[in-house]
Structures are given as structure tokens and as C-alpha cells.
Length: 190
Image (cartoon, rainbow, N blue to C red; front, side, top):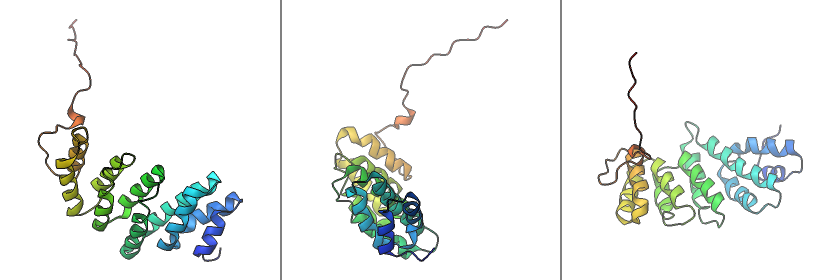
């Protein structure tokens, strides 16, 4: 198969031939960050669901490719392209983008992700993305969020901080709180 470039990738992703579309999707990683924005446009605007799905999966394959060992510059470029997509109107696509960011994002992604913490549709996804991003900045942003979050959101933010290794007082872990009363019946001896 020939070397894949951006124009060919976009053409094949929109192909009516499932095999061509799948092949392009699976090889999209080599095209890199330049393909993220045009593929995102297809993922949210394509009338054909299979084209939209293939475009989204192609972006994921770019993320996986950029996340390989020794590709830090590619990961940074792909992360920057993903951060540029956080303003899209499509909530499910923004969730997908947040998931992709935590796969390869570095500390520089923390601020843009934190801006979504108040978003009613993806705020919780942004919190979980911050939970997984490396570096002290994500921890600082989660600590600030704990202080400013509505009361109902604080246990989840406390959980994210605990995942990052931070001790949090005043918000017991929901995992340790019994959800229903249990009893143990004594076993009789024969």
C-alpha cells in the first residue's frame, strides 16, 4: 500500500468502500497531528454515520501512534490539536477528545481541560481527564476545584485527588460507604 498522506486519508475515510475506509482508519497514525482537525470535522459533520465513526477512530489511532515510546514531540503536537477541539458543540465528541487527551497529554493540557470543569455536559469528564494527566499543575487545579466546587461535586473531586495520591479530609471515600445494611447470620453447629 502507498504511503498515506492527509489528502489521501481524508478521501479514503469518506469512501463508500468499507475496506478502503477501514484501511485508512487503521493507518491514520502515520499522518499525525495535521489530520486531527480535518478528521474532527468529518467526525461531527459527516452525514454518513460510518464515515463519522471512521474519522473518530482515525483520530484515536493518531493518538495511539503519537503515544508510542520516543514520540514525545508527536504527542505534544497531537495534544495541541486535540485541545483545539475542546470548544466543539458536540458533547459526545468533546468527551472522546478528553479521553484522548488523557492518553497522551502532558502538563500543558491541564489548564485548557480545567476550563471545562463547569461545563454541564462534560465537566465530570474534564475532572477525570485531570485526574489522569501527569504533573503538579493538574493536582493544583483539582485542589482549587475542591475549594470552589458546588457541594454535590466535592466528593468526586476529592476522589480524583486521592487517585493522584493526595490525602483529602472531610470527604469520605464513596467506595468505603456502605450502600445498604447487611447482616451476618450465625451458622449453627451440628
